[in-house]
Structures are given as structure tokens and as C-alpha cells.
Image (tube, rainbow, N blue to C red; front, side, top):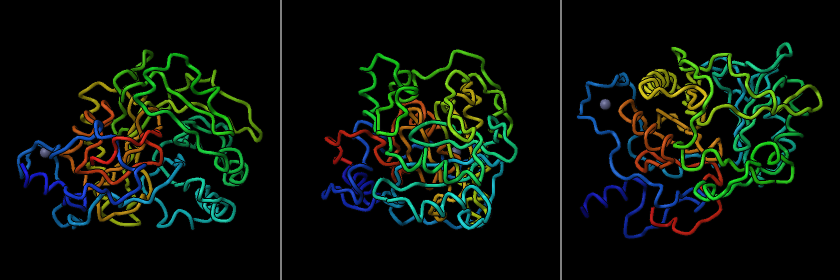
Length: 359
Ligand SMILES: [Zn+2]
């Protein structure tokens, strides 16, 4: 037992005796949220799950905890692609490049770093020619009709505003009133609560039409049942609540590094298998490919957004044998798998930081 504990301690970069995590306390999940031990209960070698090509080399030594750059907000641009220019911030004329340039010049990162990503999601809600849908987290909104030319207006209205704060997920169980989205989206850091998803995923089932899972796991263009949540904004940009209760984002950015490019579709297929088996719809859990998240040597790189986008959990060294545990523990139960954990979006675990040190 002692040697196992030591091994776990070493795996996250410090000894059990020290009990001092190498990251800000904000990154440390409450201890009752942590799943210890090997979550892949497969024999080695495993014949049940498709393995990554043996020629790929991964970093198996560097501690994962603290290996991601903290951020306060993620921007997901719907591009319908799974690979992008090597550096999306330099891909001239695109929304990603324009936003990156504005952020560099005009944004104070002390408010919380803004993390811009392209995604495989298809633009479905925008009506304007050449415009894209953009999802923002933890705000958990989808903004329509965003064009590269509107990057500044988009930045001013949605990004250069305080990041919403939330109560810890378990506190939300106490909340009864549904003042979540429409009242919560404000420019003064108003609280967005999500009373319908109180404890991880378990209460988050949708009642309406169940979409069939698309073969590649991407959402189909059918989810238009949220018209009542449109809010009028200048420039035709409209706000819709993000329809996905949870999202699994996999770095597939091959032009940055082939490891993520090759492993991402293999992981995506396995995540999709598990979700199909559990009859989970795309409204419940969406799988998207995303551009560079940092740390290709830790591929597969997976970000799980749960609690309606308020909690963003980063995993590295994910292989197909982990997909089931990630869905069952993290997506469905809101738990963090310690062995794979790289860090989290800021404030993912609420403001209460007691009982965080027994990592
Ligand atoms: Zn396996």
C-alpha cells in the first residue's frame, strides 16, 4: 500500500509525504472528487480496444499536473474541420487570428487568460454568409453570426467582460430557482447557476427529442429548440444557450504535431462507442475535435466540460482503454481521474478551497 501511494505521489510530481501540489490551489479538485488508481481495467496488452500505432512516441515521465497553461475562458470557433493551419493565431483573415490579435493588444490577462480554439463543430445556427457559431465557456453560450470582421465587436461584448463566477457544483443542489442563463449572462460577473445539472451529469438528462449519434460523433444540424433564449445584440450576433450538457474535446491538430492528429480519431471513435452503448445523445454529450491545446507529447489530450460548461477538466496520456472511465467517472459523476489529470479551467471547482490539499 505504501509503495502504491508513493507511486501515485511520484506520478504527480511530488511525494506523498510533502502533500503539496505543484499548482495553484484553484487547480486542485476537492478530494471527494478525485478517482485514484488505474482507471483502465484492461489487461496489458489490451485486445479489446484499438491501440495507437506503436511508432508514436509519448512522454511518459513528466508529471501531468501543472502541464497546462491556466486559462479563464475558452472560445470554441465552429469550423467543421479537424485540422487547421499550424498556428491558428497566424492564419490571416480568420476569426481565430483576428481575435488573437485583438486579445494580444487589448486584453489584460490578469482577468483570466482567453484560450482560443478552432473546433470540428459545424456552424449550424448562423444565418449570415461566412459567419461562424462560437461557443464560450464557462459562460456556456453560443454566439451566432460571428465573422472575422466582427472580431472586435465580439471581443468587446463577450470576452472583454468579467468571467462569470459560479458556486461549487455540489452547492447548486441547494438552488431551486431557475435563474440560470437569461438572468445570469451579464457584464458584471453575475452568477450563472445550473440547477438542472446539480451533481455531475446524473440529473442532466434531456426530455425532448433524442438525436441519433452521427457516425463521426459530430452534432447534426437539428438542435434548434432554443429560440426562446435568443437575445438581440448589435451586428446580428445572437446568444443561444449552449445545447450540450457536456462536451468531450480532443486535440486533433495534426499540422502542429502528428501525435494528436493520429490519436484523436481513434479516441473519438472509442468515446463514441461508449456513448452509443449508453444511449447518450449529442445534446447530452458532444464530442468535438479541437486545435492545439498544448502538450502534444501528452497525447491523447482530452478536455471534458461538465456542469454545463462550468467545469473544464484536462486529461493527458489518454488512450482508448480510458474512454469508458472518463465517461462514467467524469462526464456522468463529475469526478477527476487523478492519473490522467493535467489541470482545469480556472474556478472549475468553485470558490471553496478547503479540503483541497489532500491531493
Ligand atoms: Zn483496453
